[in-house]
Image 1 (cartoon, one colour):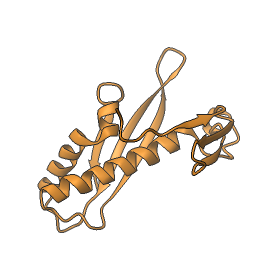
Image 2 (cartoon, helix red, strand yellow):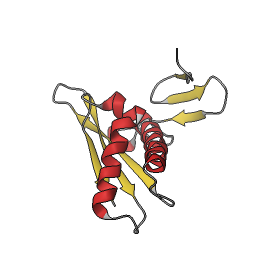
Image 3 (spheres, helix red, strand yellow):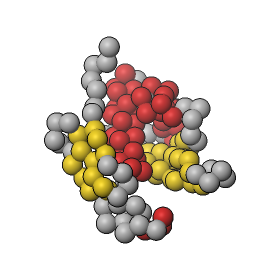
Length: 136
């Protein structure tokens, strides 16, 4: 049994997405790059925001266990929509983590790798889509 289940409904890329609790209600629009108006958000932006938030929180937990101070850190997720060669698309992700300058580069790299092993979004994407881990 899960500790929490998010419930959201969407009407398509040119429509609306909303959560069952009413806290999320966004207009969706097909990206200009795909021939749409770009006048709303899109699933890739929502996925990027969710993955970045999840990875950042996971990193804070891993760092706390390792007694590493990551105050001021941030994670930027870049979610690409790439042709799959079969007439459709696939996703690819780059996670760019900005760590405190006081953290040695190798320790930061190890922290990023350790976080990738525990983050729920990383578990969900592993073996399904390419995820590149970047520092800086």
